[in-house]
Length: 452
Ligand SMILES: NC(=O)c1ccc[n+]([C@@H]2O[C@H](COP(=O)([O-])OP(=O)(O)OC[C@H]3O[C@@H](n4cnc5c(N)ncnc54)[C@H](O)[C@@H]3O)[C@@H](O)[C@H]2O)c1
Image 1 (tube, rainbow, N blue to C red):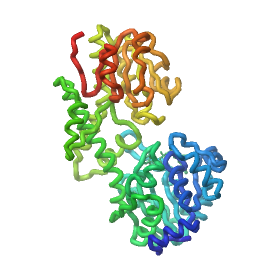
Image 2: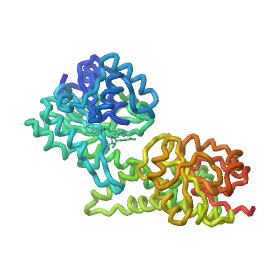
Image 3: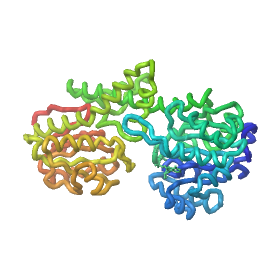
Image 4: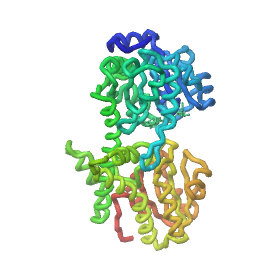
């Protein structure tokens, strides 16, 4: 059932009564949870993906995004109920669907330079099945202005914008909390090409999101919301990192100071650390920087510089700690714990471990690595040797906040390690535990000069 021209209540009723077909393009970490949630609320959903294995799994009722709690059950139930199916045929899906959601990767390099091939590929396929009254929604993160660049491709259908609707409704979530976030952690941001499309899209997202919808005045404004959220995080992490390094120089514990300062409601000092990784926070600032023609986003650029310098700072802390233990870096055995950019997720984009391993090797250290979500091949790609014990290790550096690292067995460390040095790049250890085990211990924001 076509939704343009209906009011939001009529849209909600149509969805709940299984009258609306939604095609979700991209059945990955974001797309599959969204598709399953739409189906759970009554939509007939077609998931589209170029990966045949993913499509086959979904059609068997199996979930391949294992990091997402609750998704196994949601996929199984909705496939069994006939509300969710998958295909590799994007044109066929577009012909069936009333609403098409684009949630394929928006690939970028580390400086935010875009390769939008998957998005344009999907738009092309949609154009071959687009009908009057259809709505196309981008949910993938887009530099402001990008969604509207799809208009000429969609108009190859022979329809003009207005006969079909276009909207942007960014995913405000991350791997592992997608279902929680999609269904009501935050309001859904929506911008659309015209009022009727906006009204229909509000109805779509109000159906699945308990926190409701925040309508924006334009598609571009909706795109900017998601990008600015990322810039805010990056700049504030940079501030935390800058103050943390200052605390080290002045014999202060940054976390103690930050926690006390944050009891005042206008202060939100973030967690300092070994670096900012992932596909989002370190990338979105570049969208702002790259699109600035007359303005100069100095703060955004400086924040990127500060956060990118943190892996080097962690190496400096390690060198200092080893020297305090009477060891040169050259020839020391150093174990890096964590190859992913953050805990609990197997993603490597801008992971702090990579530059840390490279620099330590340049210093002449023997560098080993371990990560509960990774393989020896991953370590090799990063330039380190895989090691699952602590035998003969001189220093440990924690670079990802995996649960397993919070529970390190200090008795075992004391028995197996050759020198007792720990650098905690993610603030996961309890300082008291480390001190009791008489380790030389440093973290970003704490560089104790304790005589031993
Ligand atoms: N992962 C996150 O934490 C997160 C958070 C917020 C926003 N996002 C946004 O969501 C988008 C999707 O990210 P993701 O994490 O789900 O990616 P993903 O890599 O987990 O999944 C993408 C899926 O799209 C499929 N695909 C690629 N090209 C395709 C094409 N041309 N046609 C159909 N399917 C295609 C892939 O096979 C894959 O299954 C990204 O653009 C990102 O901006 C991601």
